[in-house]
Length: 245
Ligand SMILES: C[S@@+](CC[C@H](N)C(=O)[O-])C[C@H]1O[C@@H](n2cnc3c(N)ncnc32)[C@H](O)[C@@H]1O
Image 1 (tube, rainbow, N blue to C red):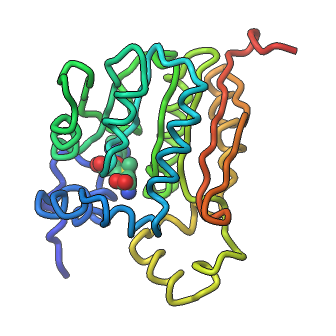
Image 2 (cartoon, rainbow, N blue to C red):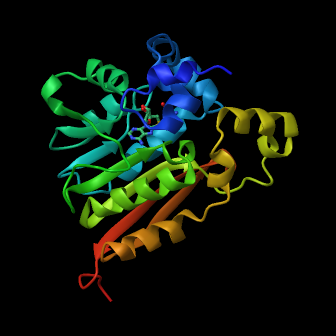
Image 3 (tube, rainbow, N blue to C red):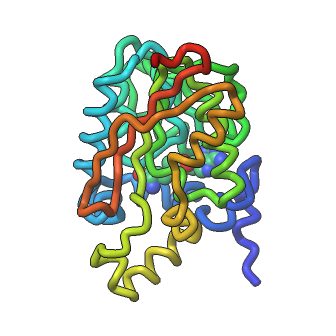
């Protein structure tokens, strides 16, 4: 049995090293994947639409203190830096190679504040951010890790803050990519936790975690992309006692 992935267990969660070393941790693959045509192909040609919709939603948020929760390939990070005021954009990821890649795309360097953390256990204090962006992270997490990340995302959002989630939509039963079994097989082979994510009610899960933190979360907008295969969802977080009636 190949245990090659163990080489990448350098402070990274086990699932990340085991299932995604070839995508995010190996420097050669980092170079390979960070090309626009490659990431666009992975997102079935929808990358630009997804990014633009995310940025459009961002325009309606309070940008006093923005967190991008984990790095992504492509131009999302420099675009976020360009769109927010004031900078810096906070970014955190558990993989140093990804943080270095993100930092290389930003000028001046001071407009990005990059920190290495596990998104399941953030070192930020409660209510730190006015907006948090989660771009295609959740479907890559096993159930337990996803619970932790959702909880931390809500905990660290300030009263009146926004959680922007760009992700696969819920189970796309009628979508041709789902109905065509070889395609579904290939996608779920490459994304071993996607099937769980497809079946999850994200809003209910967020409400559960918000309650734990004495907060309330409401879905304020949901844009479907690529015939409901993807979504860009915006949630408003409020502390109990401050919710307007
Ligand atoms: C945001 S996701 C997928 C993004 C998308 N496929 C893309 O690149 O366009 C990938 C990132 O999440 C990071 N990541 C995964 N699990 C994490 C965790 N528990 N804590 C911090 N970063 C994590 C990986 O290191 C990687 O940089």
